Length: 147
Image (tube, rainbow, N blue to C red):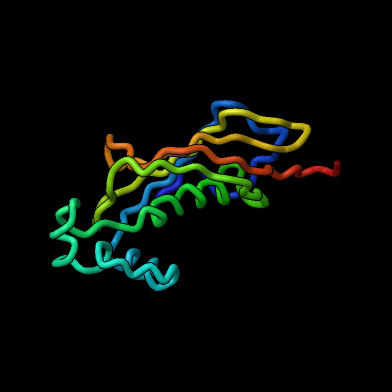
């Protein structure tokens, strides 16, 4: 997994519209198996190649929320980072992610309400040039100083 910056916190008064952070991770069979175990989602389209070959995907795919979890990692570790509270997230799944795909999760600051410490973030996951997930998150950013 590779990040665009060191982990930590960007406080509400340091955020700017257009700030962007990302991380990149290869989705492995082990990741899919562990996600199935933790989430209890054992849909065979994720775990059984023979079953998955008979679906519209013609082979196994990763859980959509596994890739979406990478967005959460960027938000919680990089932008805004530690202390951020998720308020909401919309997601549109545009294309499947397969075992072995390298997913890049990107988060960009779209709007800031400094009084309420609320931040709107554009969120996206790509495999190469293909957008596989897009959406928008609302978060409560850390203050980092006494209010």
